[in-house]
Image 1: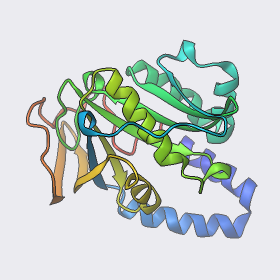
Image 2 (image 1 turned 120 degrees about the vertical axis):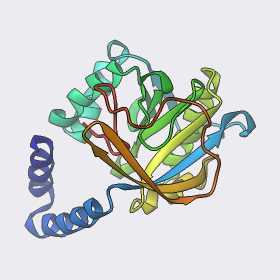
Image 3 (image 1 turned 90 degrees about the vertical axis):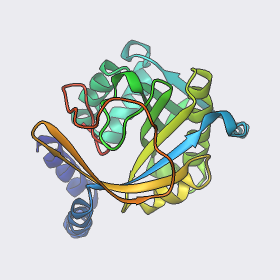
Length: 235
């Protein structure tokens, strides 16, 4: 609740009352569909190499909070809000996640997290030891519209392949059409759509659509322990 109030206050300060009301209507609609996610997968061994990086762009993998440069951390806290991003960074690295930063001329312009199967307790389907989950891809607003999101995603897929993973998955909220369009430019392919609810001691998943084959191995999907995250986890 505190994070939601912080985001509302920050948006109101930046955009004014009318824009905030319009945004609130959008958020209410999204929350109505928030339990519906599209699941996409990529076979890493079959994908082509990513395109070359030009115009001062680079992709950096940060494997721990101690490796995150102070100047990069400052940008993330500024763009996402310190009250939200600071505990998120600590929590994600504590789960064993990697943070991939897209930079232009050494300044962060986007980010994407990858989370290995060992610290992921499945919510939609079980993962195998060589599977990895990507989440929270974002290119900052002033840099959008330049094809940076699929570029970052393709380089991250290449990076996790070099770490020994063979398949990658990503969950996207069904209302997030810009992200779904962006992922069409990557090796990700739509596998299906599902609705998910977390009840006391159990994770309930209802498949609305299934187009591809899910992993055949892994732990059961009713585990919701302290190390777990949801597909929409942001804090």
